[in-house]
Image (tube, protein in one colour):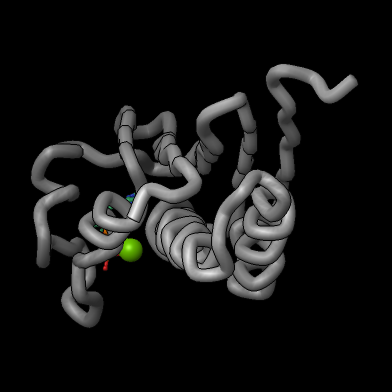
Length: 141
Ligand SMILES: Nc1ncnc2c1ncn2[C@@H]1O[C@H](COP(=O)(O)OP(=O)(O)O)[C@@H](O)[C@H]1O
Ligand SMILES: [Mg+2]
């Protein structure tokens, strides 16, 4: 019998080389939960933004750990992306459109993740790391 809640965890080094893997891993795990191809593309894009933040922002000194947890219940697919990096001082400000700590970036990552997911939650502690949780429901759009 199919379990009521199914889950998987994927852990990898915060290097650009692993971004494509993370996107595809998340989307292939979510495939079969009733999402359309377009919705799976949205999931890929949202995951991509969360993971690239771990790669670009979380570990300024050297690459570190990124943990992606996937879970599916009857109604929703939930993914969390977390790091043990520098953390974010002001989460509310960081989530605002156009806010970035690097001048060459757009600061639209969180805005995109929020728009693409059904819900998005960010928790972070300076010096301890950041966790982004997003959930998606098939047939949402
Ligand atoms: N995992 C993370 N670790 C540390 N800081 C982060 C992380 N994710 C986001 N941030 C901070 O939040 C800001 C906004 O993120 P985002 O909306 O993705 O824009 P961008 O990546 O273009 O700067 C980043 O500039 C960075 O300062
Ligand atoms: Mg970003």
